[in-house]
View 1 (cartoon, rainbow, N blue to C red):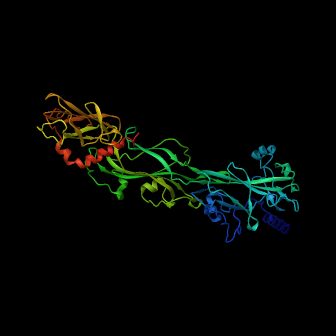
View 2: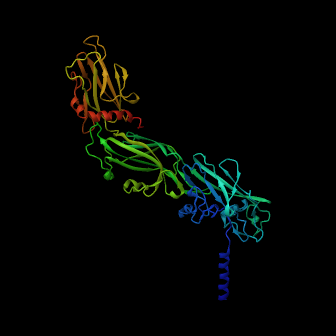
View 3: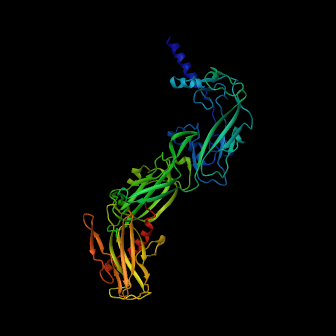
Length: 531
């Protein structure tokens, strides 16, 4: 009895080992063209077998499917696939079951499939298999275009030649093969459990997809200092959106690529324009006090819409030179032929904590390049810290046509507009004005004729402060008092307004004049970057 059991068990094992797997489309044929081996015939290289089978977690280690790839431009050559068609019924002795391409359980069996073990496997009888109908039996359709006949290649393969001018974005190619299925017989009869094949012929198919990305990634990046009382990066209009990997046309829970924002920069000056008290150190960026180094990987499931990322609470107020890049990242570089593909080797907190270290980025675009950006908390009030005329000292009279140079400095982040006797004047882009500003003295009807210049400063949180000047034949007068902040955040008057001709704050304005002029010009551009 023991010997019989051993013999029976051996027979069962031998029978299981002898079972023949059903055929399917083979997109990795060897020898389909000269010097083509190991399934590396196709173009681009992301379609080569060695790249398609690199990532075991994607379930294609044995090369039974084709994963979606990403490509940049490939002109003048067009993407090319080689395929040897296959069908579950084309080999005598093949054993096929539920899940086999082209073998679908009958509707009446689908509930049973969900409730029990499902329909049984079937074995193709010898001499009762299906077979491909001829040289024109293989065709393909690119996107929604008309199907075309595939070209015969070496080694029993067909060539699928795609156009070289496909548009950016995803394109799928449906490959069809027509088989004579008029004589297919199986045990048990497959018709009892599965949808019947065609009485004469049946078309089997597989879908292969690729994503073409010839443009750089892009996004709109703006900064907000007021909504959350934190320096916040607001992101919108991101392209491209995350793209998922598919095996044939079945989605997999993994991104082929997704967007990435990288932002870095350091503090260069205080709120009033004076140089930063402590130089930033990129190597010490972990402190997050005066240096920004952040990666913002976009969520794998992101489908569009605005995003906001607050930065560290430790970030000091002041002006920062900030740079930002948008790109796409991938954990599957062998499936991508994209421009500028490089590994991210950042090994500090910015890379490690964001989970991007070791991944690859491509299609990078520089959005901000050392752009001057202000960081001012909503609770910090803007003050006028200096106001003067550097051209007309105290007691110097003014004549019509004189060039009057006016200086001011606000401690805050924002931009200013100016009026001369109520009419707008500007010396900066988009109708803004920056100090120092030169105006031409108007005519005087007499000693008491007064002309005014009003500087209206709007900070990033929408609060308004003014610096008012007046001039007569007797000289230039500053009307607005200079201010500073008390320890509790309230405003304290420092220099009195109506201080006589020439005004106050001249020395501080001269000491920081170069920096103030530079920051003033940049401040005129700031509001375009915020909110």
